[in-house]
Amino acid sequence: MRKNYEIGVQWRAFPLHPETPEEGITLQELFAGRGVDGEKAKLRLKQVADELGLPLGERDKTYNSRLAQELAKWAEVKGKGDPFHDGVFRAYYVYGKNIGRKDELVSLAKSIGLPEEEGRSVLEQRTYKEAVDADWSRSHALGITAVPTFLMNGNEVVGAQPYEVLEHLLKTCGAPKRNHRA
Image 1: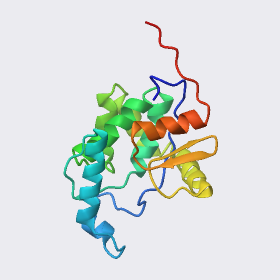
Image 2 (image 1 turned 120 degrees about the vertical axis):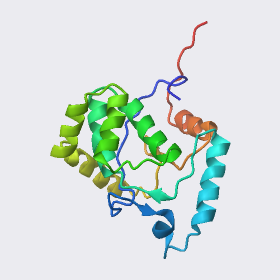
Image 3 (image 1 turned 90 degrees about the horizontal axis):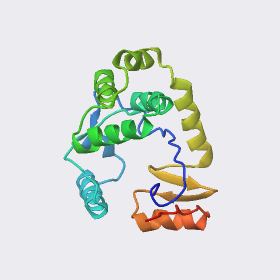
Image 4 (image 1 turned 180 degrees about the horizontal axis):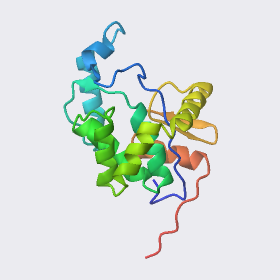
């Protein structure tokens, strides 16, 4: 989208299963009592990922993303937000890594060129806790209940969507196209 439209992207944290312990829980445990067939949900997610050309590995657990969200705020301040977000998504969805573990997150930050000890300090001191709390409060106030949710000028698109759906949102909101010169 950013290649074709003059837009900025601002990531906001969302409280996705904040009760999940650091060691994670199985997807079966997550869906228990919710009237959701975990196997069907996994198959649907795989189908959507395949349709959109997104990599998706096999995983049986979900992990708490709170610390990843806090470290992402730091990565954004350091000018490495996009590579950090991409790395967290790949670690979680493709490789099934536990993104609730500090060592995993610090390693990821280091892999994109962020200072290891500073990252560890950010996590230990919870430097960006309040920033994530504010995002969670904002999500609640806006009535957001799913991720991803794309918001622009009061319009929203919920869920992983094809390019054309997101482009329609941009056009509806008057986002200017980039001038590509040959």
